[in-house]
Each structure stands twice: as structure tokens, then as C-alpha cells.
Image (cartoon, rainbow, N blue to C red; front, side, top):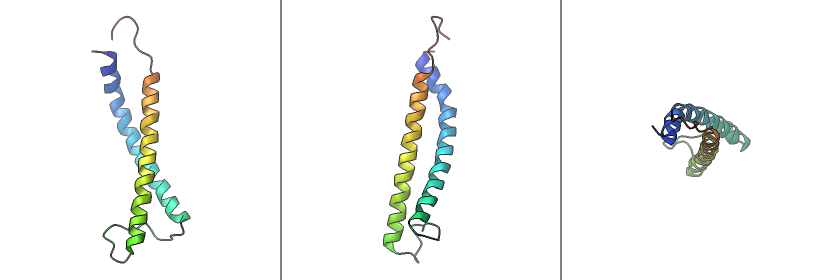
Length: 93
């Protein structure tokens, strides 16, 4: 088994855990951002008929941007950490 294949297999559970943590982090950041924008209530769902189109679309756009940014940062950090793992010595593990 090549070093690259072994590192990819070893990173899978780490990547899954980081994905779950980043989702929770992004959700918290979005709630805080929504409050900073002056909204006392939770963000609207797309099917919430009592909310205006502009509010629903603003919430969806903001949430998507935050989730994408957090995911990119976590993926990049994971890739950098994986690249920093030492390769095995002359004996292939």
C-alpha cells in the first residue's frame, strides 16, 4: 500500500469529524450574524409563508456563504495538516 493511499484512509475519519465540527461552528456563526443584523427571531425557513421573500433569500445567502467559508477553511487546514504528516522511512509500511 502506498503512503498516499494510507494517508487518505487515515484522514477519512478525521475529515468526517472535522466536517461535523465545522457544521456546528458554521451554524453558531450564522445565528450570531443573523442577530447582529438585527433579527430577534430565528432565521426563516424557505417555506415560511409569514416571512418576506427578501428576508428568506437574505438568510439563505448569508447561511450559504458562512457554511462555504467555514468548510473551505476546515478543508484547507486538513489538507495542510495531512501534507505535514511525515512520510514513512525506507521500509514501506
